[in-house]
Image 1 (spheres, rainbow, N blue to C red):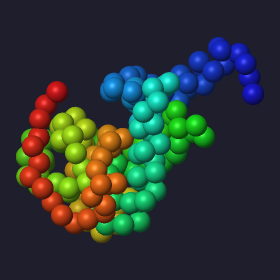
Image 2: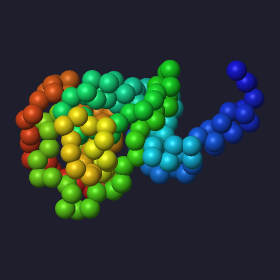
Image 3: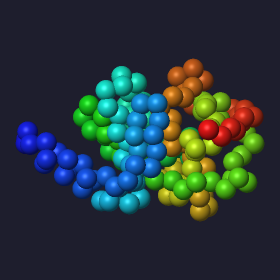
Length: 155
C-alpha cells in the first residue's frame, strides 16, 4: 500500500468526477469509471450513514421493498466510501402522494428515478427511489406495506 498522498489523490480523481451533492455528513460525486453510479464519501463524521445505507440495502434487495431504494453496489471496509446507483431527478408529477411508513425526510432531493432492473417485483421503466436513506424508520416500523401521506418539501 502506498503512503504517497499524490498516488491516493490520483486514485480518487480516477474514480470520482465532479461534486454533485453535499449533505450533513457526506459528499457525493459522479464517477468517471462507473457513470451509472455515484460515490458517497463520509469522512470522520461518526454518522455511519454509508454503513446504514449498505446494511439496509442488504436486507431489502431481495424483497419487494427494494423498489423504494437506490441500489448499493460496493462499500469500503470501513464504510467511508459507498458506491450507489445513480438516479435522475424526478419530474414534479413523479412524486407519489403516499410513501412507505419506513421512509422519512421527504425532501425532494433525497429521491430520484431509477431503472427497475435491480428491484424485485418492479416492472416498467423508472421508479421513484430514495437515494439518501442513511436515516430511516425501518428499525421502528419494519418492512411493512403500510403507506402514509408524504409531506414533500424543498431545501
